Amino acid sequence: MPPLNLGNQQPKIPLDVDQAWRATAGRASDTVLFFDFDGTLAPVDDDPTAVQLAPKVLAAIEALAPLVRRVAIVSARPVEFLRAHLGGLAGVDLYGLYGLEHSHSGGETVTEPAALPWVPTMRELADLARAELPPGALVEFKRLSVALHWRTSPQLGAAVQQWGRAQAERLGLRVQAGRMVLEIKPPVDRDKGMVIGEAVRDADGAWYFGDDVSDILAFAAVRARAATDPGFFGVCVAVANPETGHEVAEAADLTLDSPAALGDFLVQALTHLR
Image (cartoon, rainbow, N blue to C red; front, side, top):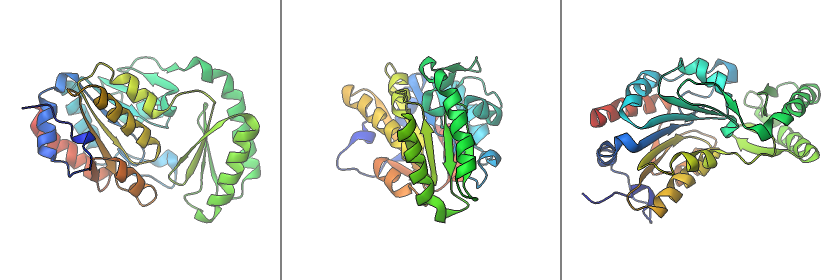
């Protein structure tokens, strides 16, 4: 069977999922499965500290890990948060804070050296945000970034974003928009697209599952790799949501209804890869 390029066809056509997994099975030992965390593996919660993995997801990832080259979680969360929620799964790489941190197969957490000098700035910014933003805005300090949430108070969205962007400009920081959240980060060149681009350089295939605008960069990295190698097989999967779902789905090959649907999808994938 000739190499498939379902992730790169123009105009976009419906993805034959069974055919895609069969193509993956033929190159599973050189395929990487990438997953975002919030909104993909776990439903988004009003309290970002209270999120829980969707049913079947953890068991499916544990079963998939030995069948493929690598499973990797690529998230805005810190590595330690991911490690705690994934139970230290063997054979899984963790990329936290958009790639500013990483841990391979349960190893130590490595921080991008260029980001470390910004930790005090981020701590001060988090304190300032708690003091100046109105009640209802949630400030999440992540050591190397600060996330400003307004999910429980949607009417604050414009004010929170205006404040956050002004502070980022004042301090020479960068911002990443998300689902009712604005993330403020150090001016360091790391994002999900860069993580995936590096991780698939010598791979023969990749699937990326994501739900937010930052995941579109990851989709682009998968497509860029396929564009340079007709033998590479890449699939981009969006997880539906009411905030950014349409934009992400437009950039993907396939859309799943929810993190719970992803759990079922991965269980079905096992029937092709085993």
